Image (tube, rainbow, N blue to C red):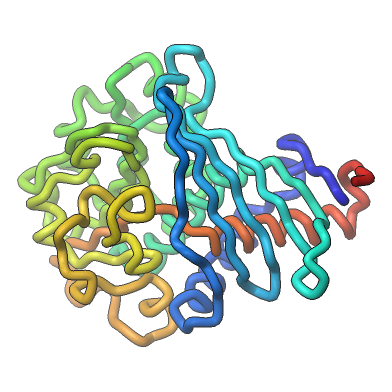
Length: 311
């Protein structure tokens, strides 16, 4: 069995290839060619441990990911993860891979796929709300699919926003509202239990990608934005109760939304006008983890990277 560390994943993961692999995975998902049950969670007093098994692209794998929102006070990531891969013909374990970086990058790559499919071609200003792991990953991935003239970051901690802005040659906004009012593409990368945006701040034709998720609360997207937007999801399971579904989508009709894979395959239109507000509400999906882990694993085997471990 091959063990791949976080450093191995960072060395092997090509973001452009990942964006294309994620897009192909979404098409496969919407075509019904995957087997992915809804994720389940076990709660402890401080957080959750979630299990995300699946079969996709002829690969069998599961991700175990913990979500402990209080880790910020300990200067630790809120998410830790492992991906275990198995031979799809024999069930034998083939790899254990650090899933923390995989989780961050596959989420951002999926947002990039959504931006490529849904944002206006003339989008020039990218705004990111948040300054943590997901914000950094989005700043690495999303500019690869659009040529932005300006990148703006806003965060509750201005110092954290400034540190990230210096790394990516971005500017720091004085407030969330000031940032959002400038956005052509808006990436919400917070763990906020209540909305961080207001529909009235959004300009016509803005594309919003939201990846934040909370165990309890209404979520980071306000109800007016949700109701006023064309909603695109990875899977309509996003309308299920948490932990499988999104807090912002509870009580809504799943048939009113389209899956990103359906848009990519030409089964449904994405954006229908320049003034339309589009919302990609991400919940994270095991297909993303599987195709990312497969990309890393295949490159590791070819390059002779990792540690072989006996069972």
